[in-house]
Image 1: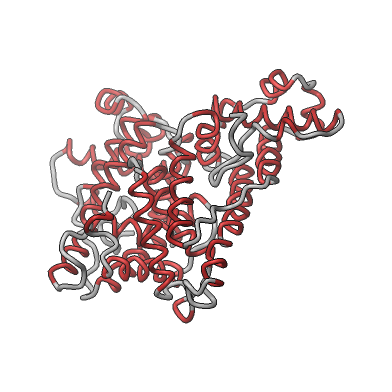
Image 2: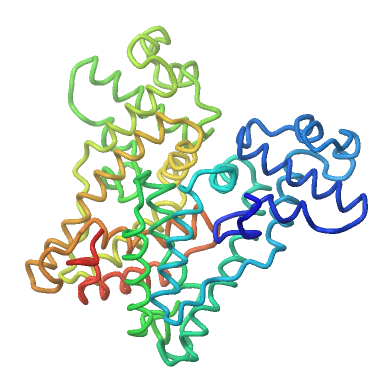
Length: 216
Length: 216
């Protein structure tokens, strides 16, 4: 994990954050929130407990309770903290290329194995079991979507898509089928599948499907 | 519910099935599986119990245990039984129209209120808590997707899309953003949103995005 970037399109990563500078409180915060994500990835929402997070982070249980209140507070804080990274969407030079890379990154983020994939998938599952987790995931993904919309803004600057194209919606169209296959239909998703959806979304955007009067 | 059709694009409905003819065993099966879906819709997977299903259906608990084994067996059987209906996709005369109606039906199926919407949403949530529920939902949605692909087959017959267009994949592209908004990003979805995604998918299919060499 150490050699990977600080975040992905799909979810938090615990690697970089723990190397941030800061005083004892900042180090404790990082240790607790990293431990929260690791525990979530390993045991799921149902297995998350303040006791285990405290033990894993080396921070006293009473401190964890006082500061985060419980499991939902920990999870919300961990997701908020994860969103505070420098992740940026790809810049391949074309909307097709950018969206394909993004869709590939989403598929890879959930299926690529390792702690990151386990945490990302566990976050989705947790959102069905806890309203606090659902709210936190919504905020996390809304932020990622807003960052991703930059690829459509760049395409608009290059004249690839009509003015007024809804960037977030183009990105939703590109990545949603990947999420559908993984978490709704429970179907495998290949890199070719991801590219096909991304290319279709890019071509739709070029023809103006996400600009103008069709916009709801 | 009695006036509604037997099923929807998104999920099972308990209304028609209970009016099927049949002997005592068939009536008991219908009562138990209808009760399973109603309990799921009201209390979610975590609140599902053989005791409650038995009490609600009026079938003896021992019979329910013997025949279905437990909660997961009940849920799998209820979804399999729900798939055995005569639901068919819309036939509006154009691919744009058919996909828009389908996407609208998906959005409405989850957000329209009533028992049906509660059951459909609870099925998605249950798939994150039980492997048996995930398998059953996968089978249910794969069947729905195969039926929906007929709208693309009809479009191919009319010359609207190129030969060899992957019907299921066009449908995935049309409906996935609706699922993404509801269950991943946790964003509201309007009828206009649903139509926009459906129109984009239809136009992509017309330009050949889901046929030929781009197909993975």
